[in-house]
Image 1 (cartoon, rainbow, N blue to C red):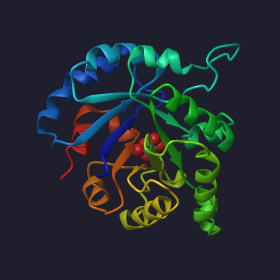
Image 2: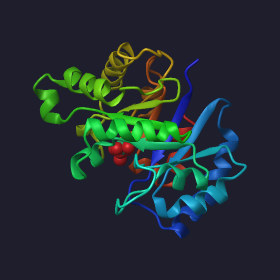
Image 3: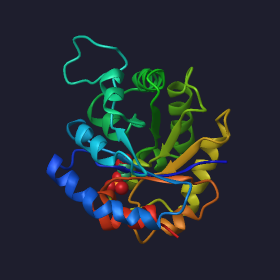
Length: 241
Ligand code: G3P
């Protein structure tokens, strides 16, 4: 059975105060959430601690947005697995296209981060996806298969989530057609040894398209940026029909 996971990626948004205000409005909505559906919030490092304390005992799981592969050392600006697990997390996003694009993340460093997450008992959410130019050049499959092949070396597929995030659909309002996202996610699954890996779609998921996206046979959840930032809208996504 594949697990359904609706995850918010807050990116570089929300102070501690704003995060607590969000929770106050969001948590009551979980009373309507069907059993077996998981809600996850991947928040900035600076709010992990306060979120962990305030999510204790709730159904929401907590995630970080990055992890370094070394245990400690001279790595300015990075955070280790032990630092994260001490706070009490479940998930960590690895290889988001914004990190690949703006912070020099490669398939090799993505692989190291995935292995570090698993070594520390965290479930990594591996992001893969093609750019507009790559899609237009007919390279979607080749790009994604390459990201998977290099990223997943020695990775335990029983402890993994994958998010298909076409870069051209992120933050643009230009959602990938649900049927096309379903097709690509089916292709991603064909490359895995564990066919039960949860594979999410990410890219302009909103209250008005979530039902269609989640009705697709291969799509097991969503990784959501903008629409996870307000309690009402994220609640609508978590409680999709
Ligand atoms: O990781 C989620 C993401 O990149 C999608 O962002 O704002 O298009 O939902 P958004």
